[in-house]
Length: 148
Image: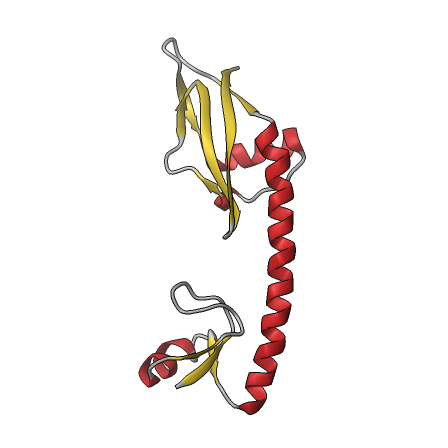
């Protein structure tokens, strides 16, 4: 069955793509969830317009992410935290704490979900955190945890 995707689906395609999938997958999963629509002549024309607007928005978001990278890579983010004798924190520094520190110190609003922090930071020192604000843009930032 030929369908038009309404949302980007990993491993399948981007928004506005015309793709061929099995009938069962389209009828039982994609169409009921609102992720796709069965292709017809009118829908294909609409899909072309949807794809052009998606590409424009994607280019603007990528450009904004690259500007964010220029600002954040240049400066380390400093987070004060209480620590014990050996430099271990009494609590931990989470992705939400890092996002708040970035907002406060660099003036860049960032969602905590963009930060690739697999485990919370539990010690004083410098730590490198990957930031992924866009699927095509990823960069590291330096977070310095200092004793408060």
